[in-house]
Image (cartoon, rainbow, N blue to C red; front, top):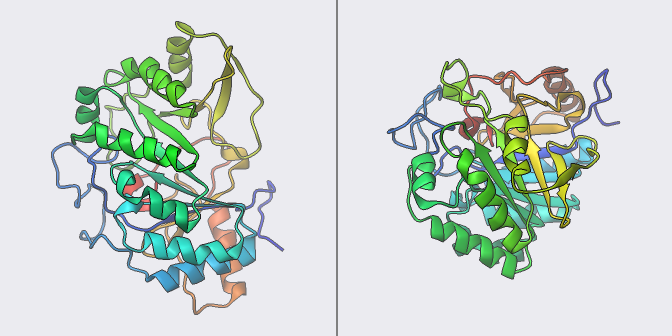
Length: 324
């Protein structure tokens, strides 16, 4: 029987981090002007790009968790998963387990180079983080250039028949002016976009400078240009969805103003094999393939107990460390 808590929450979605290294330096993930291999809040020295677990270990770990949990979705994350040479071997290895959806979240910087291999490996969809379509704003947020490389990657993935969604973190005073251009960009490619409220993670956790642009703020901007109505929320969904008069849909992931803790079904594994039941908990639970299933079930129950009941509080862990 799958582990569940007193609120009937179960783990049905696994987010597996393949690396805690990223090739962008987004300001909401790490402080300005630092080496992207050294992030504030990391309790250990920076490692190589590779996961500390081998591909066979990662595949075995996923297989055991699927046996215990009957996973519905596996999402490969990082850091930036496209940096890991283990991505494609892991993708091929986990395909045999029959998990219905195998997805990936990426910044898209290397997508142009890897999209064909991802398609051949059985990826079912990709979320691309894109916070601006204006080059100057993109550089201000990511501390990197070459926005067009990401756009080419998105277009190639679509040409190959890989479903793509866009994720955009919106920050007050930084990129709220990008909301309409991002919608138009998504509309031009007939792909869904989800706007994210800034999360109090890592160096932002106790920061007084936390420029959250709320769901209500985002809707006000969109209402100045479009007509839309809210759609019913699906169980365990991270995003609230709206449909425009032309049937285009967009979402908002409102961790701060409209959290979805009550039915969250997500489990995270970082690149060292540590398990986290909640982004608001920075307590790692080590999984060991040598342990028996009863020990894993006990640890899964502990991870479930770390979930918040009502509100998201964030933690000192950065998203790059815990797996975005």
